[in-house]
Image (spheres, rainbow, N blue to C red):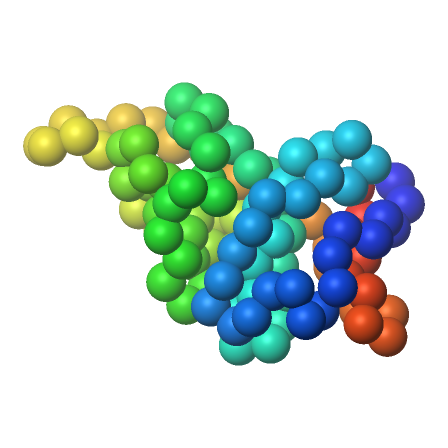
Length: 108
């Protein structure tokens, strides 16, 4: 793996997220209070685009079945669910991020 530039720091304000590509891997990039985090773009449950979900602090919620993931660890905070049904949900993959000047770099 190698670090790839995916954005400039000014492109993503705190509390925002966007889709990026690093080394051919589609990712979600989020700015949480000035700290950048990268996670797989597709939900591990059924593959919904997490970039269309909701960012709440250090968690992102899938728009399809509301699975919620911690951006710092990839751990499942809330499993996917529909009404009273709960679904087994795998942990999301996170990727190392570093800042070099004004460049956001992700190791993917």
